[in-house]
Image 1 (spheres, rainbow, N blue to C red):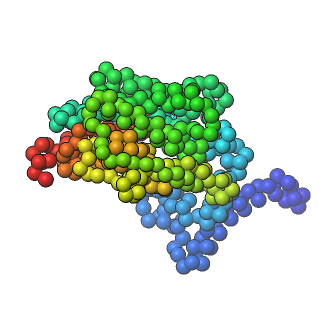
Image 2: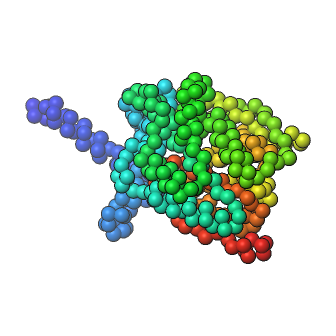
Image 3: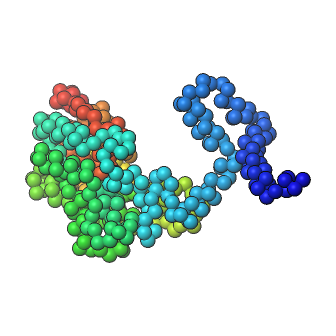
Length: 388
């Protein structure tokens, strides 16, 4: 009897009860709903490693205990250990960072699975440049820095005083593009200069809770691209006048949402983002693309934010049109700027008609992580364009 009352034996019983209690309660819940217990599905398929992993994921997704307890566990993990989980990294002063961007910056090449590298990216860029040049069209490339490349000091106090942080693959890309005489807008240098000249926290170039740039970053990039185009005399100043309209929005950042902690989202104030909408001066209507434009813009979610997101007509595309005094046209695909936007262009040959400049934007981390890698995509021929 004394052995049964041993505290260690009691702990073992409690531990076994917890282990057995969760699956037994899950079976009871499923039977109560009239469902077949998920645990029995393991006997309906071959016990391969792939099937067993899928089985484990299905059990996790169906578990009522995980559904109820996971948000609390994640909240405690964030609050006590400053752990942002698989996709988020907790920085300083309320700043959050996208983990793949940080890993791109800090890890050696080949550490993790990749879809591309700097050499492949440059090869695809040169291929597009040459195809466009054969059609009398200029290519302007604009890699957008990861947030952590511009604000490493917001990640850790050890980076205090750093002007910026450039990853090895980014450095290789920029060096190769320069050697190949590809026209590039160097936002890395531009943003570092802007941060140095205006270090005030009131106008950062990126959002604190989001992976994307702020309206200040948008406007700075649009001015740089417009200046580059006019300096090279690729197009003339247009005849459409635009004006700006203040349009602040409240935005819950994508990195905050990636934490998947509803409790944290509910108690964290949304960022007030000081957007500026671009309106036509003659009609006072929001900016709209024009497929007949001389300028085509290709890119990812850095072109989508504020443009088709709230407040609309306040993103890079609209602000570039204002710099050029003429509308542009665009193809945007979240995460797909490395290949998918060019594939979309190849299916729309008419969009190359009348074009003089193509601006290709992609975020820095996609050098390694872009969807579908850096495939070579043949553009429509002159005959294809002329027949439409």
